Image 1: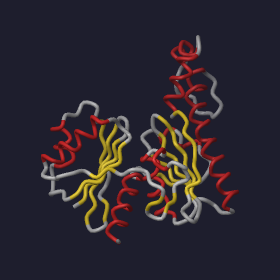
Image 2: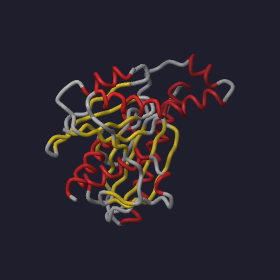
Image 3: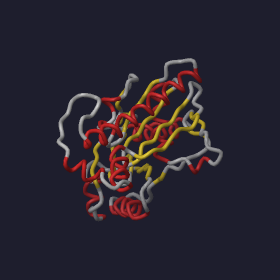
Image 4: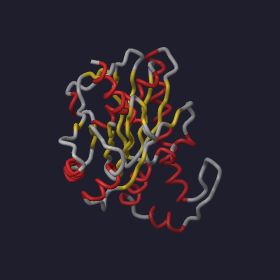
Length: 252
């Protein structure tokens, strides 16, 4: 059994892969976890033979995972890095290592699902968008604040908006907001959705196709209602990418 782990800035997601089949994703915030918690949550179950992980977090969480793995009898954890090419996808970055590994693995997972041009959207604290053509060439993408970070930046960078927000009611249902709270929060979500639609339209024009749109991330549900492009929500997209990397390694 192979344990696949996706460590984000605040949450960790994991699943197991047995005979090419991926288990349902599990996820939790890990800020207060000790090494004992890592071991209990990820390794209390059937024996794990190998661990493959992708992390964008600091060294503490990486070290905690490695410590938990050793206590479970696993000699090492393999951490994926962004490379020039892997699993049928070619990296657009001149220096491949500068592409965030979460983006890289998500792109691999999305391209494996689509086998065609596709757009990958991951919305969390930050939001990332990546485009891939039908040949597996990663074309690059965008990084912008996630919806809540957008809101906080407006509150921090203006004199009165935070006060107006606090005084505003919640619950308007129309698209155009009639109070400050909704104007800010919905405006940030619509702005992200518009960027998603623009990215998909640009990719469609470049590839002369109808790209698949895959959406993931802990805050993606805040944005999905405002996206006009047909999409597929894939919560475990990074784990699917890790599973594809395992499959490619086994095929060699």
